[in-house]
Length: 362
Image (cartoon, rainbow, N blue to C red; front, side, top):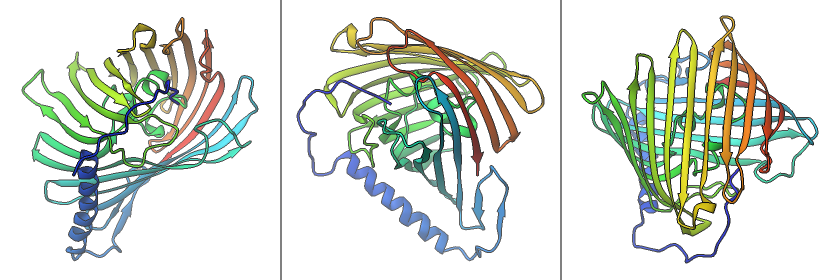
């Protein structure tokens, strides 16, 4: 959870047609357009094929459904043991034979918990994670309008709990930037640059679609992420963002980041590092990094280790965290995780103790 210092600032500017209004109209158009295209088809919905983890295709309408669910058990230091149903996420997407594509993700967070927690950010909430319309300008270039995951690093884009290795998430992937943006994005691949360079360019000008009340969304932002092939089985990426956030509009922030992943024979090494500058001075800068190693033990069981450093704004020294755990992939769509989290210089109350989860990808 982000806990930014709050300052008063001027109200957001108004205009005849803001970028947020344009995005909302495009999202509404996406729904109408997709439904119209589906209604124009003659295919019956009775021909439904489904395999766990691959989503549900609704015959030949172009619509598909998917999602994931996560149940967890944790026993953290200085807290009672807790069992919870953390996420019920629903994906709805449409893709026909044209260049248009629509995608949405709703996530019902903190559905059930025993005992009930009164900590900020752990109340039940129906989050709108993504809602966007894509248009493929060419086979390698797409323009996107709506609400999407902020393309900073790798972890934030992977996002879904069944697809990541640990129950806990590195602090640097949640604390230093808003994880969602509402606006426009141009993304694609440059096949003739470094054997296939991937890029994302994005801009946001307020108008957040259903912002999470406990988070601090973008007030305005521009940014970019590029990723290049690394060696034979790897990739390295670089991020840049310049932004203001709604609760701290008079603080301008700039972010530089690097991320990498390398995999071979089911081994994986990955990491991310971020430095966020503040025009309020170096005391308000934030920085952090993590490195993670995954080692296969059997056909379905993996050992996972991670080490993190994170220095929050106005903290004198960095918090150091480590994670040691196991990841058991019952099937590609059912994942069981257990881990122990430890920390030193933990002045920011990062979770310490035992954490586990069972994730199901629909």
